Length: 455
Ligand code: ATP
Ligand code: MG
Image (tube, rainbow, N blue to C red; front, top):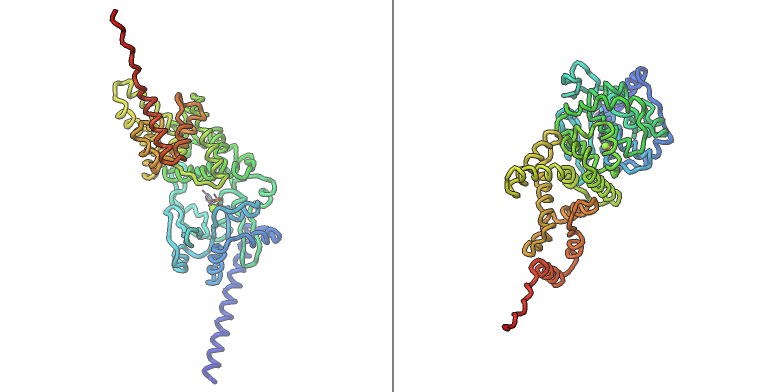
């Protein structure tokens, strides 16, 4: 009896301690709100609660159950409020990366500049970050003011000021089913405005990638850039050169998956950002209209594929952008006396190594780009003995689409596009007869001249 009584007493003490701890934590949050207040949005939160996905809810619930704060934030909340489907779910918490790792078996630590945790559910990844603080003292900066290391943790209010745009800083509080909006993001969302949080110049200097993000979100959401968010870009565009090539590459790839790459390219050129991502192609784009048509034909194709839910590969668009510089250099080397094949190899090597200084390109994609280019010559020349090799090449589809873009942009003198378009869908016997016809056309039988009669 006494034993049961003491267990009950212990249980009650534990419950009281837990309630006291939670109250204290919540009241701390209230206190902090005196410094940066948020507006609660109840009706909108119902929409978010219905659309937040299962795995994200699982992660949030587990963090809350273990006594941490946890919110969904960023693109997922923004997109749900705009009736779009979120690309991914970002969670933010007061648990440290180590505490998150300990909580989820299916998690891994990523990032150095920003430590993040990926919680993996099959093919889906939920990104969990710890509230960031705005600590001038502890964050490491470059000469131009770019943040190099930034792993100091803070409160939700600190985290809210550190986010890039107001519409990306709306927090969904699953526990109380409400939205916390520290910077009038919902108002901007309703007015279709993309506004950077804080002083535009300082925020771009801190992280120049935000300039590319500004262009990406304004095109993707069809939002107008708020005045200073827009005007600060052009004079600071050169700061992109301070960003490591790996980060620049990641941002470029994100652009390709938006479905509005055509608009984005035009805006990047307008804000002089394009030149700092693709310096060599940029020079050719300025003066060569045919090449410009070719590039925009490719961006339109990419956008159409994304809209139809088809897959794309970053290698395709990179191959398009770097094609003209390769062609130009090849012809220069040939003019200098080099043979055609080594000239081409040398040009490819040079163009790729010049590009990876700006946007690194993973090795796998470099090989894909090379293969797309190599196949162009085979697709144009149609050597009968190579037809089956070309058709069964793993890169045939991409190379064929590339040929199609060249064709639509009027860059092919003798188009073989329709021929390849036809042969790839035929059965073996019909393919054989097309190849035979090709041989006949290439080596027409010499006409036997009638012998002159001896007179
Ligand atoms: P999407 O995932 O649809 O491309 P997103 O807004 O979720 O858009 P992410 O790159 O997933 O973009 O970033 C998640 C959130 O992290 C952003 O919404 C923003 O709040 C914050 N964020 C990302 N990059 C930066 C940055 N460079 N500076 C400040 N905040 C950032
Ligand atoms: Mg996201």
